[in-house]
Every structure is written in structure tokens, then in C-alpha cells.
Length: 112
Length: 114
Image 1 (tube, each protein chain N blue to C red):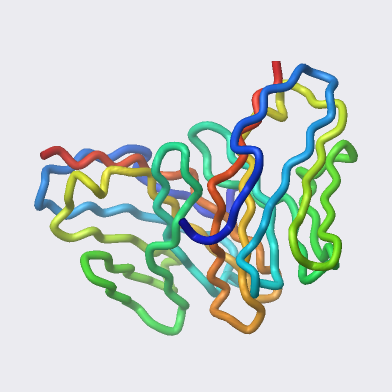
Image 2: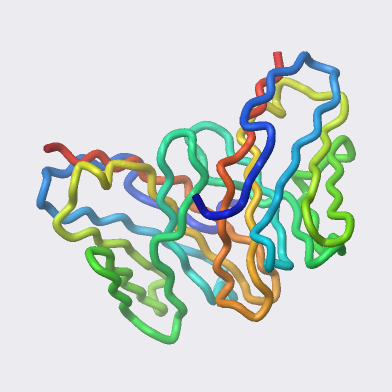
């Protein structure tokens, strides 16, 4: 059972544009929602994370928007750069369970 | 570089052979996780250690898989009688108890079973 659904599967954005990736979850016990960035041949690297007690978190060009009632969260990348071209994964975990449940990933391409 | 190292980075083996991977977590991290990632998919949880104790195992972890973390430092993941379906990237992550659940991933070991 896929507990975290991610869309779109792929995304192409022009340099300077806004990239938006969406995730929806089913398990209301999830209480930690990170986003990871992965380059080919590398392990995932944590970008930004949020807990359900806030609706938005911003770090530099990256913003997470969180809608608890809709069980949805999204990643916004402002002023997208070619160096942002990578695969992005949303994830969720339950504090008592520890393991991360990942979405299926979004391959982002930022055109120069 | 997150500070989590994995060896080997690549492993090619024939079906039926046994393989063993090693993960060295960030030195002060007492939690260690193994995940498996197939092409085009997100990582899937396999197992989790707190210090030397293996606290959780996924249903994905068949009897052919075994993981250890002696002395609560490095960990090994062994796959016995490998099958072609075992071909994947095996990722290790570590985190610090009492932290914010932030897991740092290693570069992974790419396994190809011929």
C-alpha cells in the first residue's frame, strides 16, 4: 500500500521559474515530513522538513507548504536553477516508528 | 558528503551467490537504517538499529537478508542466495537519538545480480 503519493513524475521548468511538487499522505499518524534531493549515483540529501504544527516553512529558495486537513504537502523551489536538476522525494514518518516512507519521486529538469 | 560511508559502491554477482555490504554511520549517531531503492522508485525501508539492537524489520526483508550492527558502530547487510530481483541500490542512513529525526544517507551500494 502506497502511503505517500507524489506528483508529477517529471517536471520541466525554465531557469528562474517556480518548481512545484506535490505529495499526499494517507496515514494521519505521520508527524514529520522531509523532502530529499537525489542526484544520479548519490544518496538522497535532506533539503527541508516540516512538522504538522506549522503550515509553511521556508529555507532560502525552498518552501514547504503543509495542509493538515487535506493531508497534503508541497515543495516550492523559487528561482529554479539548472543546478537544481535532480530527483526530489517527499517522505513521511511517525515519531514512534522512525522509518521514512518515501514518495515515488519527481525528476526535475531546469532548462538554462 | 554526509559522513555516512558505504562499501563497496558497486557489486556485481551471479545469481545464487552471497553478498555483504558495509555501512559506517556518522560516528556519534546511534540510529542506523537500511533502505532499498529500485530504479525510478523512492527508497523502501528494510530495517533499523538503535545502537546494537535491531528494533524493526520490514516485510521486504526476507529470510535471505540479515543485518547486524555489532558494538553499535558499523553495520553489515548480507544477502544469501541472491536473486535477480535483489538488484537495486542499497542505502544506509544514520540519525541521532533525541535529534529532529533527520536521517543522513550514504552514497549507497549498487547491486547487480546476473
